[in-house]
Length: 105
Image (cartoon, rainbow, N blue to C red; front, top):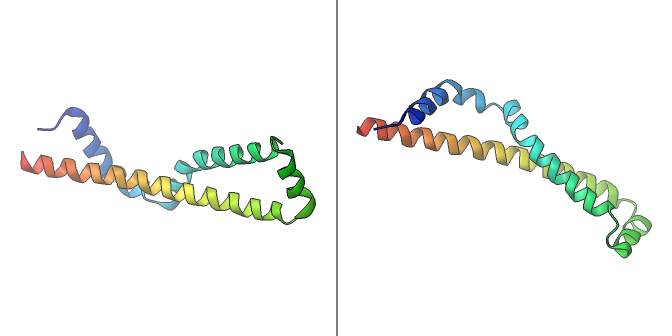
C-alpha cells in the first residue's frame, strides 16, 4: 500500500521524467554547485595563505593560469553532468521501486 506522498511522486515522475532527462535541464540543476566549488578553489588559491607557492605560480610559470582555467571548466562540466544524471537516476529508481510495490499490492 502506497502513501499519498508516494502516489503523488509516481504521478509527478510519469509526467516529468522525459523533461528532466534533457541536457539543458540537467545543466541548470548542477551549475550552482559547480560554480560554488570552483569559486572556493580560486578564493583559496588567490588568498595568499602560502606565499611561496603563490610566488612560484605567478613568476615561474605564466601558463599555469591557463591550465587552472581549463581545470576549472572541466570541474564545472563534470559536476554539472554527474550531479544531474545522478539525481535523475535516483528518481527513476525510486519510481520503478514504487511501481513494483504498487503492482504487488
